[in-house]
Image (cartoon, rainbow, N blue to C red; front, side, top):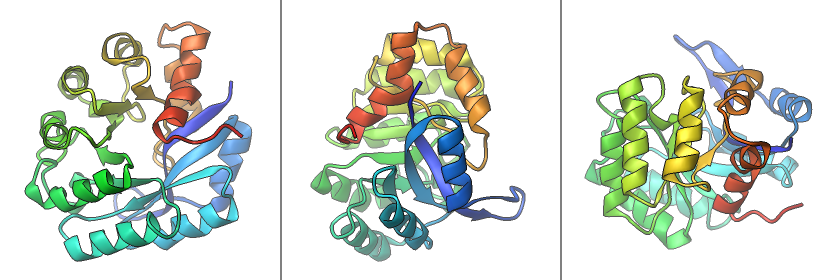
Amino acid sequence: MKKIDAHAHIGEYGGWAGVSSSEESILKNMNEYEIEKTILCSANYERNEDTREMFESYPKCIIPLVYVNPLKSEKAISDIDYYIGEKGFQGIKINPLRDAFVADDTCLDVVMEKAQEYKVPVFIHSGHPPYSLPWSIALLAERFPKVKVVMIHMGHGHGVYIDAALKMARRYENIYLEMSGMPMGCKIKEAYETVGADRIMFGTDSPFHHPSVEIQKVLTCGLEEEKLEDIFYYNALKLMDVRKE
């Protein structure tokens, strides 16, 4: 079954994580697990050139996101204009946990305004207090109803946050869900049936999780094969408005 990985990184993560991802490892996973395209971002907001280089080397299989830190507003605006406006990037990635801002803070307004201007989605890490909880992400989505907001990890590892991600996505039609790192396969099925058949997507969060684990969560969630194809492939294709190769 062909797939689009809606969430992967290129680069190194030191400290507690001690993991890394390279062009070679990304391509290996794509070939081995029938991943046709990867929505890719760098390890942090200072490494967007890593994404650009891989995108320019493999333009048919990489969908690039520009990683920005809203607390560095001038750089964030400049990077969005450069990478989306000039280099063909197709979305924005932000991480409240890593860069220490609350997901509904007004510092994000300039980023969201740029996303609305360029008509691209914003991918935002979820699931860790106090910065990236689903309720805060929902308040951000409420302020910018024209911007598609992808709640990465759909609440992550805590059951209460997973439940909140589903509730918030049901309330706000511009919230989309990506399921990497979220352990409850049954919640993938629930999202498909109650949030929207086109608003839940497969992702790996590579290099933090292995594709085989994330794939099994989707395969065992309880949905029929044609619905699994939406999650694995068509929903991300539609969200990113990518032409089928």
